[in-house]
Length: 146
Image (cartoon, rainbow, N blue to C red; front, side, top):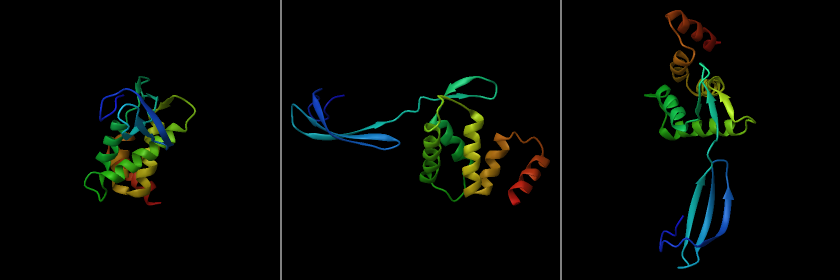
């Protein structure tokens, strides 16, 4: 990392603040004396075990895309989607294992969508639960109506 003002590689950290998602550091350049702030995003070192047994790295973008598709044309903003994604990420960070099944992630998404929007829930559930016929939708609607 270099100073954004003079490109020096020598600076000191004046202050650090941790949050669940990132670390904010206030820095001062030893050469020019200017101060600047950096943010370090905390990466989830998590592998997802797919239904077929394959493993792939956890992708925040993939999670965001699935939730966004379910909430498309519903009264929700990108900020709402980001809140759901961050909430699920926080839950996953608390897990003891570095591997998690796609079912656990899907169950968390389903639970959150069910609480905020039934249409989005049904959209996501139809793909997640692999609905094949109209009766699958009817059964899920009966459960949802209770």
